[in-house]
Length: 493
Image 1: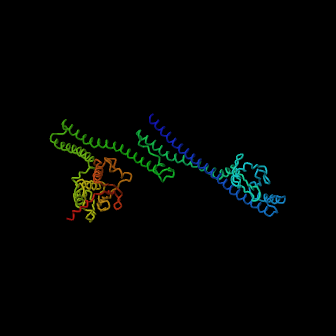
Image 2: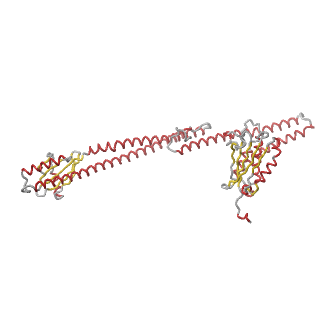
Image 3: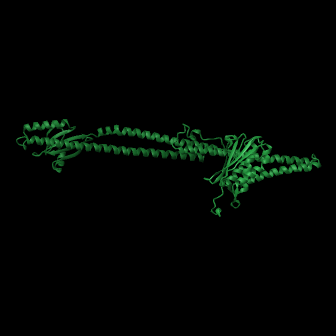
């Protein structure tokens, strides 16, 4: 119940965060749109002022010129009015607004739009020494006005135009508002889609983890969230694909660990039950007289062999848990070539039983010969690997042991390749696990700890081991490394 409540709280929190981000985006766009509209309106007014000022100046100059050509510039006669009216009509034809000839008391002498009253402009005319520049707001419209006083008369030539905010808004709507609205809507859709793409694999991983916690180790995150090459794996972050793939790998390891635990229990039970059954049978036979007294020593020897087998198993298990920790006091330099040669010589009887040829290819580089570590344990690695190769190499087969220096990593790479059947690719990562056997029928002898012990010893020396397919002989090829001897400045002495 608590888990469900927590999950609901998590979803609610993510939803709130999404809403906050969406609302914030809308608010920011709204503010930007408002500022854009104000900017367009101010720009339209400024443009109107420029045009009106220029037109009124032209109108005033034309009227002054006409009056100068008359006999008495201080008196406007009928002929002068005809010229002024003609000038007014000409100006009005090329100007999107109204032109006026106005007296000081606001009386309109002539105009193409005589219905407007300019009494409100007189104070601004006086304040500007005859130059009229004003902005009026009437009935939701803005009127930009400018004018100049005639030279000889107490009369002003005035031009006025309307900056219609509805026209500005219409332009704003078509040029900015509609595209911006579509962009905001598209951005919100993309944002919501991105959130869904982000949380979909997270929800999938959450469901998978829940199943695993309930003991279902077969649960896996869907492939579309783990494979970047899958066309369905469209997420807002590539790291989520990596995370999902890593989660599947962790579940694989958990499943393998559970399988290992079962294998461990069955292996221990098998490897101990078999000799115990033999021991129990021999002891029972001795006690009830089934085995004659003259044969008791023989069966006691068999009992001892079975007890030794149990002891070897216990020792191997104990060693396997401690070999990854190397005592620095026992670290030493040793010649690798001599160790490999001695191991191959000592294994000659096993090689001879199956008529196996062992070819040794040792590097002649001095750095590749001198290694550093716990010599006895590293020698044990070589013995285990070559013995394992002999076990799985058929009669009349071949084994190749080779060395090569890696001065970059300061180690010597050792490879052991055989002409056996090899190891399937899907099992190569597991053969170094404890009690794991490629041959599940258990027809091969041993406890399944040999390769695991090799891995632990090498890990204690900071080295690794892996198996691959042999290119030359076609069987299994084990590759591992020993540390090179550290560079010692006193070695020259």
